Length: 179
Image 1 (spheres, helix red, strand yellow):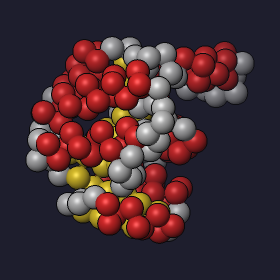
Image 2 (tube, rainbow, N blue to C red; image 1 turned 60 degrees about the vertical axis):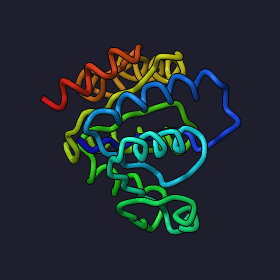
Image 3 (tube, rainbow, N blue to C red; image 1 turned 120 degrees about the vertical axis):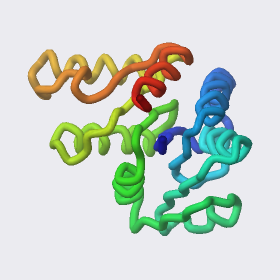
Image 4 (cartoon, rainbow, N blue to C red; image 1 turned 60 degrees about the horizontal axis):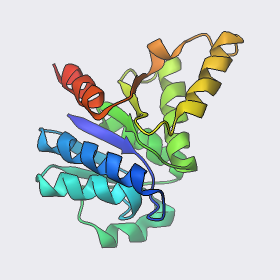
């Protein structure tokens, strides 16, 4: 299964996000899963890359042309150069079987909302998992719930994404999606 991992490219984030993400990613790539990611060698992206390489999985780096130099720091099995950060997300979505959202910043949120909007418009119908083990996404999930309750969106989260609140739950979801 090809997993688009959307996550932070920062090294100076709280240790709890790095540790919980590293543990999950190590287990994900022990299975027969390949990585699609933003082609950076820092932060949680680096953890995803290292785990995929450790288990000799295929790595698809999808990078906007403004960051093409990032490919010099890593070895991807397939390098995809996108015209922009937005097109990077679209390109990665077209390649993946599943989207996995780990803690991250604006880029991660952008990738999540591009995936949600594409799914809402029936342009993309692949599973989206938000990994909320550290409660990182709780405020965002409450905002989405509020939008739904106030009728600004017609799809509740059940139609668009699932939330994994533990490593075990996330791995079970991925296993179910494989079958």
